[in-house]
Amino acid sequence: MADPLLRVENLVRRFGGVIATDHVSLDVAQGELHAIIGPNGAGKTTLISQLTGHLTPDSGSIYLGGRDISHLAAYRRSALGLARSFQITSLLLDFTVAATPSRSGVMRARKAVCARRRRRPWSGWVWLTAPARWCPD
Image: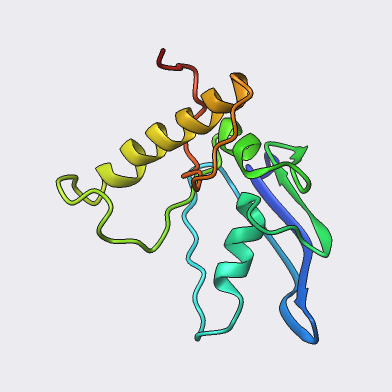
């Protein structure tokens, strides 16, 4: 059996005395879909934020394609193709549900990568998507 595309090992994140993720481990093979479900406060958003680099885990490891990405910034994970969407429903009203993450992600990821290449600060959220290979003038 091939190595998983995404592997999470013993991920822990605490906020003071509250344990948001408690030794979470999972493997996701290429082409698989997984759902993360649970009640409010169960740590779903904390887990996704750790996977995408918006929060740093207190301990544990995250591997993408066999590479340890546990300490990479969100924009670097974006360049590797790790995708995330946010629960904001009014950003792109003219796009279909399927088109919203891909189009907005490409625009924001490119903007962040291009700003970094030009050594300019960029303070917006990065919608993670496929590698950005193009920068506008």
